[in-house]
Image 1 (cartoon, rainbow, N blue to C red):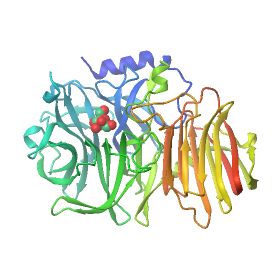
Image 2 (tube, helix red, strand yellow):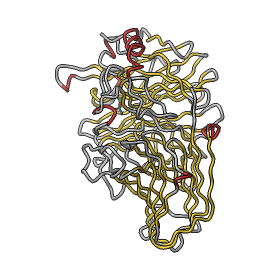
Image 3 (cartoon, rainbow, N blue to C red):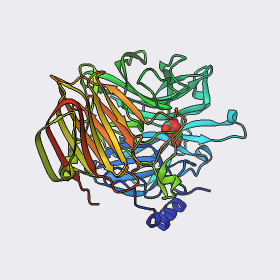
Image 4 (spheres, rainbow, N blue to C red):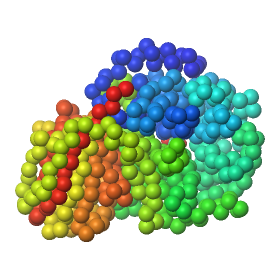
Length: 495
Ligand code: FRU
């Protein structure tokens, strides 16, 4: 039997046994055990609360709890006691993903109760509410489940009905819930309520085509810079050129929400991040009226070195990112609070490389950010190797001939393989330097790299596990490359 008490005691008893080697310095992790999706992200009474899918007892997925982290500034996080345990008949096999909203000074969490059966057909997913008056302790309401299979439209499967995103419009609350339709494929259902307890079905907000994945998960919908944006995490979206190469992909769709009809019209679809480890993001409108997103920095179906090495933990969140739309395209940038943790500043100007390789021992970093402004005119290829040590490196390459930017973790350290072809150790994205200038902000933590290209026009997020302390930075040029500026800050977050 899983209970909050049992989970919290287990964490207290075991958290000091976790092996620190790859523990991040400024990315959210669980104290011990496994995490996946961010859940219930909210700014409440002066603090950010980030909950997450959590199995404390092993560094692999198991019956889901909601873990909890808190922060005043989105960068310095402290871990708080577990918020939800699968302790009721309607969530006995997992408190799956969901979101929170504030009403009458309380936090309402809407999450999915997962109920296993003897056979896969017997699985049921239902929606539940838990209320908190202090942001820490949650009471599951007597009316649970507030939505179940009787509330599904025709052709929606009761086995796959999950990840409610609650939003408020005037006096009405809406919930977007991911669903699978009977002949296979994803759709987003829309429900409404005036009190968050009684819900009524409205519409199919968006239905996927046959070739758009087996299951849609973790929907999010918000207005940004005059547009409506729908974000969906998709299991099994087929690879298209350099897009959707991971088994699970995140799609950002800019479009128009018709609230009268309850239908979303798509305009522009993009993959949200071109790295190897990015899934199930959630956003909030924060205290500063910014749209801030956090995502799981991991991918399903791969080995996770901290699990195989028995370090006692697995999984982390991305750096919180501020979203904006420019030229109908989604931009992401780290929240600016991160800069108050910058130390050891070092900058170099006008480094010219002509068919050569230069190592920069004095500007290296392991936990920090490297920012470059590069004039690519006249270059064929330009590599930035980070987190280097003997024989290991993570390569970031701009190939001027194809106009692509490549992240390669083939030689990053411990090998990560999964259900994708073995060759999936690198991904690329097409970039257009403005007046030949390529701008990069490369955020590194102990076991991760997040690259922000051209002021957030594209991002690439990946985990890496160098086998030794690795901080070397090397630049390599084919043709002529002029690095106008290269700047390093270490990042030091004391909690
Ligand atoms: C997405 C997901 C969600 C589900 C949760 C279970 O990564 O599969 O659809 O609620 O993880 O942990």
